[in-house]
Image (tube, rainbow, N blue to C red; front, side, top):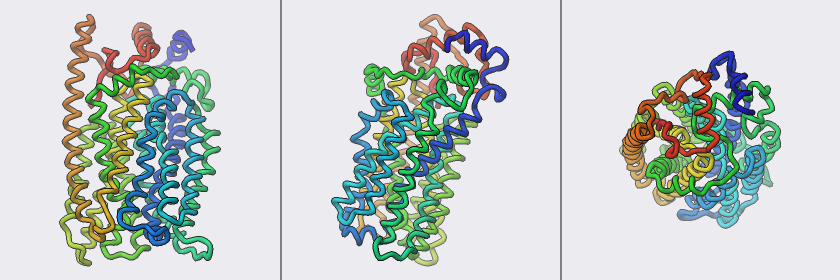
Length: 498
């Protein structure tokens, strides 16, 4: 697929025009796969919280902070696996890597049904986390190589929005399965067995449907493949490369913006321990029984979905991820403060539920930070490394978040809630620092262009709704940048997004 072929394919219409680019087909296939997989992955995690309502802690003889450790152990496995994850994403084709991970985590999930003690439960959850470790980096990496930067926030929101759908599904399915009376299996065992087998069945389906990238997409014609490749050149984030470059890894490690994103993603994932692992127990502490508690988690799942989609839509329209992130963190702060300050009386139940549902705004954090980070990172190895760093941050947050809560804090869990309140305030501070840092980097890029004899001001076409690259000179310049697999620091034409 040379330059002349791409030029011929794009002569008739602008590459970004809806009549020519394979945008709708990409959305139909890629979003269907990543959305369904995210739904399954988060559903697998959500059933731990709902299973706690149906005797998991009692039947496995958990005491003290053992339930917190069970909630954290999968994140420990994910954290340990990240160096290998960055290498695998570059070296192993997604069509092979993704089904393998899915099959592994499905087997681990189903195995939890056979656990009867803390050590066995800890082991099964460890392997669950190990196989899930590469999922978020791989999903984000796929989004980055299939879509332009202006399209990425909404696409990430679509598959991240499955957090809410999976919460709804976990609550509804657990409510139904929890009513099953069996002499062989306890309700929580039935829930885990159902979740694990559902995941195992999906592995061959993913292998059948998934394509590695646009250039080999089986659902596109040869002309559509060429147009798809061309419309992504404006991202200036590099082509698909299977060469692992240690210089990219070092660049990520030395950049302050990398560590700011890691810090930013740690914070909301620490906060999610409140709702993800202890959410049902907190609601139960309002005075509801286990079946009422399970159903009351459904509106929280709906709020998650709305928050994720709305925040990423707003970021796409405003082209300001930092401001949108801060705006959606404020309601989470208000909700957490209300949970901490309100009494647990029957009269306060409506206000307590409103407060808890406001905490769903914290789920705007992950997709916005992911889209913000991947849109500001160029180079194949640098992207995979940055995503692995972020996954490490997600894992570190998910690991430490549940440890803020202990069974001794029940039923109010006030010390844990107070800590989460401070976490959300810190997230706003980190977002402001990153915004100022990226503004500084853009000024440095402008100085670099002027020093290299180029115009100081450039048009970032990757953030436009339509891209026309029919200019031969412009096309050659973009192709040179892509072919060299330059990082954002090496490419003086790169524009950082706020």
